Image (cartoon, rainbow, N blue to C red; front, side):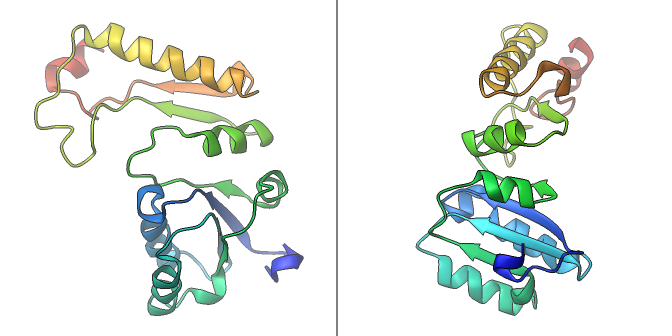
Length: 173
């Protein structure tokens, strides 16, 4: 924290990933504007829109509370310095960066099933067998977490009631 002039009393959020729009950096920056002044965001990754994102921090008046680290490659020290890992990703359900962060941290991991794109997931959700499809998806994600070094007792499985499921699907789950 001191290396990047982040106050000791700051609540530090870490977001890691290139492709800022896809990884949800704009949403994280907008959220910073509504958080207390003790909140700080570290963004590790690179994007051709880095200058635009820096301008966005100025527009939102959060520039002093956001640190961009486009060249950082060693993530574990940052996982340890952060109070929370955030990834408001638009497309990545549970990417490697999130699993790495959770393996390094000693905190619960919540896996939530959701089918499809958030903008269209409720239009026409379809399953062969919703309960089995959700179970299989969660089972595969749990296995991936365990393979990444996350202990099973730290994993919480959420079937995602209402996310890419019809009323009938929700009842079946």
